[in-house]
Image (cartoon, rainbow, N blue to C red; front, side, top):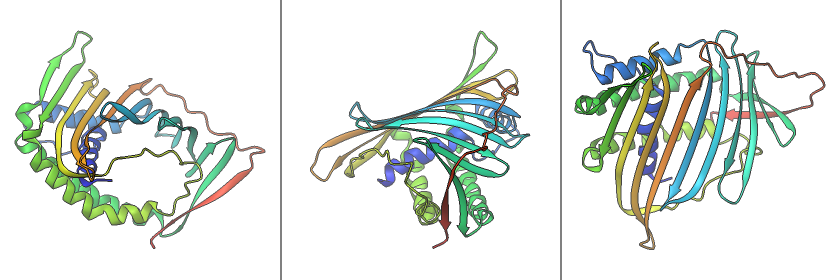
Length: 285
């Protein structure tokens, strides 16, 4: 995948999912947003609906719809997702219980087991990545905090909005591109041996070669009166030309919404009489 597109997804993902919390003492839209993201991660149970869209020149390359139910106190999660690349569609269910991960696809149940490096090793890399992301967000927001707009809504929510045009993005893109290159080998090592048996749906992405520009990044978040992010949308667009000189405009869009906050009940997967297929997730080559 092109580094500029990775940069867009990197910026969008870091800001959307709140991987870092760098809250200053001053009250601002930035502080409000980051604090709400932190509080969102501390919720006991939630139902999360996530929609993802990837388009090229207005044509759909990939869509997915996911619902995840989590109970952090009981350490339970179950969810379902449907993906489509226009010609193929795939669905799966995901479960976490008793410290184990399971995936159900095409009437088969898979249990994910780790071999090679232990999961704790990945935790060390995650810590390093989080520290880098914290520095990144500091860089991104240093000159952009005043661009974050806060609007009061009738239902008591606050809408936080940030819109960046292409003239405001180059520094951010360069920083994220360097960051993605730094961690690309580690992330590839972590994922390359995972079975693709139930993850066969992939988009056909154009390989951008020239005139690559991140055109816009837009973030909108609704903050609940209890100070958590109830709904959020992230849209980013990158343009460029492929090796044949054909112009492309790639747009990635995430929409996420929480419901049943601290009221979600997660039903564990009944493993009675289930035939499990063990998939080894190898790391550390």
